[in-house]
Amino acid sequence: MLFNSTEFIFYFLPIVLSGFFLIGKLELYRLSVLWLIAASLFFYGWWNPAYLILIIFSISFNFAVGLLIKKKHSKSTLYLICGILINLSLVGYFKYANFFVDNINHITGSYYHLNTIILPLGISFFTFQQIAYIVDVYKGKVVEHNFYNYALFVSFFPQLVAGPIVHHKELLPQFNIRTNFKIDLNNIGFGLTYFFIGLFKKIILADTLALYATPVFTNAESGELITFFVAWSGAIAYTFQLYFDFSGYSDMAIGIAKLFNINLPLNFFSPYKSFNVIEFWNRWHITLSRFLREYVYIPLGGNRKGNIRRYLNLLITMFLCGLWHGAGWTFIIWGILHGFLLLINHFWRYTRKTFWLMNRESIYVGRSFSRFITFNAVLILWVLFRANSFESAKNILQGMMGKNGFVLPAQILNIFPPLQGFVKSVGTMPLLGGGTIMGMVEMLGLFILSFVLINLPATHEMNARLKYFALIGSMYFTIQNIFFGHAPSEFLYFQF
Figure 1 (cartoon, rainbow, N blue to C red):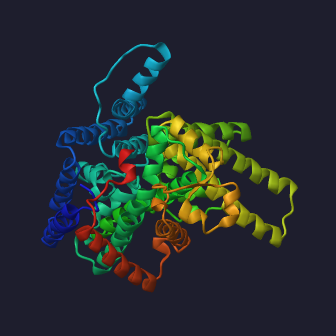
Figure 2 (tube, rainbow, N blue to C red):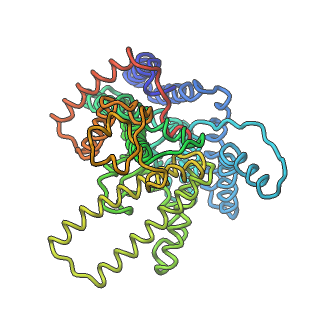
Figure 3 (cartoon, helix red, strand yellow):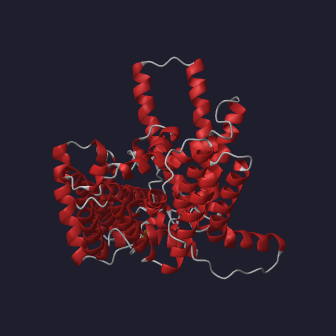
């Protein structure tokens, strides 16, 4: 079930919310928890009821492993290792089996075949969440071991299929606060504001930007030569689309949880304002970065064993980050390249502090230039992230470098005579707003609007007045789109 669907907004959410507070008013707190668990499983099963067995097994298995580890006997380490391996095996089968078989076939020339495996929604999210739980049980960091609260911690529908990746210490204690089962009008207002701002990002911005991004990548995959202006328009459109889509989902998840008086962690903090790649990963998908830092990078040794080991740990962590995002070499290379950017960033920080003295003017110029470089580095790597193959990514990246030529529609080129010396003219270009002046103006206007919006305060930074106007505007445009627009589209991170 999609957050941006009429079924969710006008039926599921009001019914679940009303039932939750009605039961809470009767002070039947355990029943309130069971109500939310049942609603969350219904929400998950709406997509494919068959996979309810998977998530119920996953919840029951990991809770049982946690109980076994908690006993602190000689086999605790064995239970932990088995628990992690079985969790990773589930993800490996559903997410990576076909990828593995395809690569074996390519290397050996064999013809092994697996039936098409449908990836269960959110399996990477709820599996990593539970791996963190059993690791922390092993470390003695988990206090509560209540099955009903644990089941809700994993299945709580606002964060179930695409995060934020919630830590047990953030969520479990909230289920024991009695006042959280009663209506709080302040939280209702806060939650609705977040929800509609996120819905605006998804429906109005991300889905509109997709109209310019998707055809470029689709045509690149089919082998059509992607020229300079088309390549840049597709890359820019996707860069903004992905941000508004995923941050919009996160805002909606935070808002929905707040309606139930539950606080979810921040997942985005204006990442495209970053001055370097280190800062970008502290602002983009924050809960994933936190998980990778606490459960991969630090256990590998972090920065405690010298710079060489630190850089190696960064590369391993970002390799796993790429692999987590998808079963494809484009994702893996995307992650590794981000690892190299982080390595260069850390080395640059060390070099600058050691050898350079910076005055105020050079810092200002440097920060502006750093932000420009960071944004474009992230944008270029998003091409790899989005492309279905290296060939299509190469096609677009070559286009961005001008190797596939410079072409503009005749209507546009006639307005800029100086360009006619090196830019070819064609009648129409569907990938550039249809090749008309109005189409180009609309596309550029959308890009400018997106750039302005990413430079505004993040949702959690807005003051009361700005939130009020954002809520009214978001409600107007999104509700109008729900009733008169297209069918709701999936969020991009559902595929991960």
